Amino acid sequence: MKNVLVIGATGQIGSELTLELRKRYSGNIVAGYIPGAEPQGELLESGPSALVDITNDQQIAETVSKYNIDTIYNLAALLSAVAESKPQLAWKIGMGGLFNVLEVAREKNCAVFTPSSIGVFGNNTPKDKTPQDTIRNPRTMYGVTKVSGELLSDYYFIRFGVDTRSVRFPGLISYVTPPGGGTTDYAVDIYYEAVKGNKFVCPIAAGTFMDMMYMPDALHAAIQIMEADPTRLKHRNSFNIAAMSFDPEIIAGNIRKYIPDFKMEYDVDPLRQAIAESWPNSLDDTCAREEWDWEPHYTLDMMTQDMLAKLKARLNK
Ligand code: AKB
Image (cartoon, rainbow, N blue to C red; front, side, top):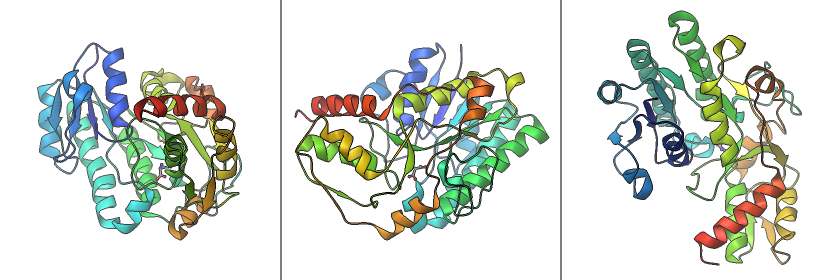
């Protein structure tokens, strides 16, 4: 049995991770939400939920005590592009919030998962097959909070023994809850427009490669890392994980295999393009494979077939 608190349970990752955790574990899997983002439908009905604003340490502590929580998934964050327009809020949620979570975890003996991102890397990082341990010098507030979060999480493990673990997520693609304000969002939006029969206007330039992953693999990674044998872990915060790397031309070409008249044109967004260019083309995930047997399942083609089928059903197309 496990008792888990998911903070940010109605967001892009949380809405699916909470349900997956409820399928796997018999204990209380608590959906933590903020006002205006209340759980609905299956998320509301299949388990307990609680108002947990990550900037409110009392709310975190009370929920952890009430449900005897042993593991916290800390999924609250502003994504990269929106964090550039609200850097103070991004820091308050990303770092202030993480500090609250780690303090509660220290006092109440919880394990903590906080996702990191390919956004920890910057212009001086090796671009291809980016190694696990390399230069992390982001120039975005999102990246600054993610690098600082990795360091703070490792500090709490080394100094206080808090069981902190993390993965660096690439762009995540899902047909369930859309992302908001990320640099990799185009790789979700493109499927929606293709299924609706629309032309897609791409904000990222042709030739810009980034790592991406289908959501089922991301959920699997988030659960598998927390279940990993701690004696095998040489790293903790945070592991490179990878599944596929493509540019807009490659994903559009893959969609055309199934929707031959799909059309795409470019209207490059300078902010997102600059962020994308500062990120790696592809990551080396050897350490995750060696230390906790990470292995993705979905290729680009498998993901495209599944995304198109699921979105056609959802959108009645
Ligand atoms: C974003 O684009 O901001 C995120 C990420 C790669 O961390 N999807």
